[in-house]
Image 1 (cartoon, rainbow, N blue to C red):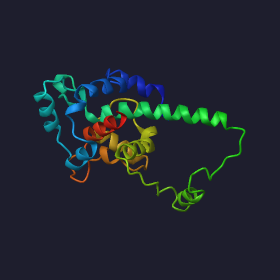
Image 2: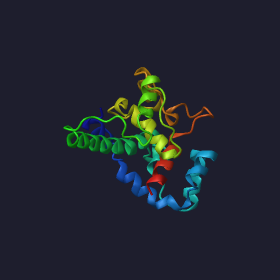
Image 3: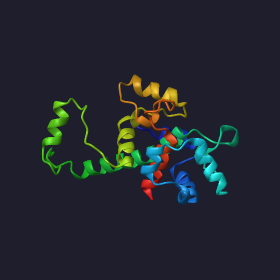
Image 4: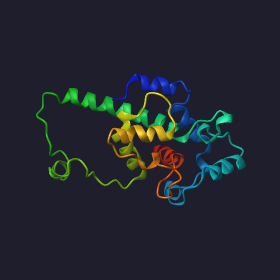
Length: 195
């Protein structure tokens, strides 16, 4: 589970979900649609140049380290960890309210079938998600309990996830691999979905 140490250490870089969302509002209008972002996978430098041409303050996750920037995967973790913690609180409250009721496995609109599929596939098959932001969120929530409590490079993050036997989300895989999408694109898709 994510502990308070996770948010404390990520707060130590003074970059949280509220700051990321506030920055996003300044450059939101110049970004392409999320589907276009995912298909064309605009490069880091392309996005930097587009924001510089618009004479807008550069978001911290698009700045270089010497400019005071942070890596996009860290910004994505900051954004999604906040959502993950909120989701955990909701689940705990829901469990407290429904503690006396009998557990139901057929609360899905299709009845018990998704539950049976999960059992028969030993948890390897998951519901299909068509919204890119939901897909990104779902992949992150599966590994959120493994995210380190301190800021680490992306290769160390991938290694920690692999060592726990979990699937590495597409946006944390090697960005040099053309089949993967970079974390700055995943972050922008998540931000655009929230607006």
